[in-house]
Figure 1 (cartoon, helix red, strand yellow):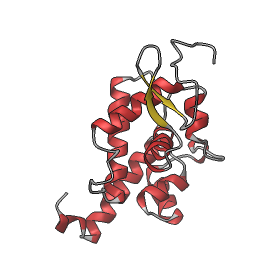
Figure 2 (cartoon, helix red, strand yellow):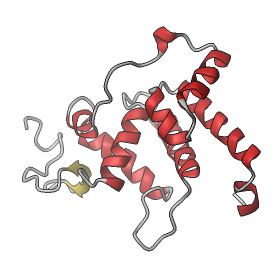
Figure 3 (cartoon, rainbow, N blue to C red):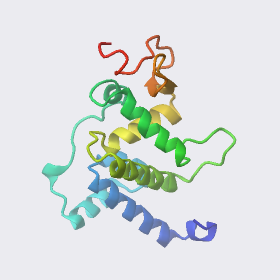
Figure 4 (cartoon, rainbow, N blue to C red):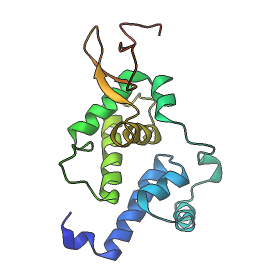
Length: 173
């Protein structure tokens, strides 16, 4: 986006509201939507009310961690596929690259997840899982992309983990 348009407060607020609608449609929790868009809880409540999002449809409770999600039900291979797509579209930057502004980064995360769902519609990964995974790999580095020792496919591992095999090569961890 052109710099002069990024500084326009009306366009920026419109982008925030549009992104909030997208995130709500993917079922994200209020706290995470607020962090990504910069909208307050009251503003998000107004957006939900205007979109007629029922309270029963909103996810509740604590947010899971990426380690819980991608070590358990979804697996290392699906997490690695999500991260490789993120690297391909330029979400995960090297240290010398310019960073995106937070709103543009959230839009790119949403675009990347929607592209992943278009390619693999039967996935069980939700947008919230992808955001947690992105944060674990790009920000905190609590998960790292690596290759399986046996078949060389891309998997996610913990930084000091000894077992570096995919679920196909070692189905019983």
